[in-house]
Image (tube, rainbow, N blue to C red; front, side, top):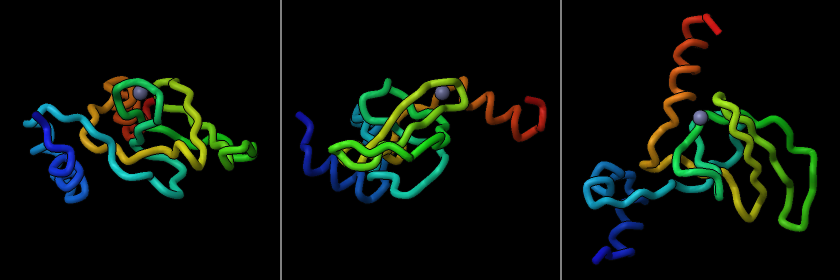
Length: 108
Ligand SMILES: [Zn+2]
């Protein structure tokens, strides 16, 4: 039986290794005003991708809509009620990882 208060307390403290040992996968806090990075998109898959913000010029009843594209080609959107989240202990997308490595070496 998982104690949700303990889980949230550990997440607040950034102790994701311990959460992983407990078998808990959890995203972090809302990412705030970032334009790129390893992010967990709400409603989109079970991994974190390396996303870049591609637009933020639409408005909806949930606030400003931001569209994102990951290094591996995943499209996502966020808005004020469903913001992008910090990765927590979600696994990183391997495709994004390898594309990032190539970009750093300047070969792709
Ligand atoms: Zn990816």
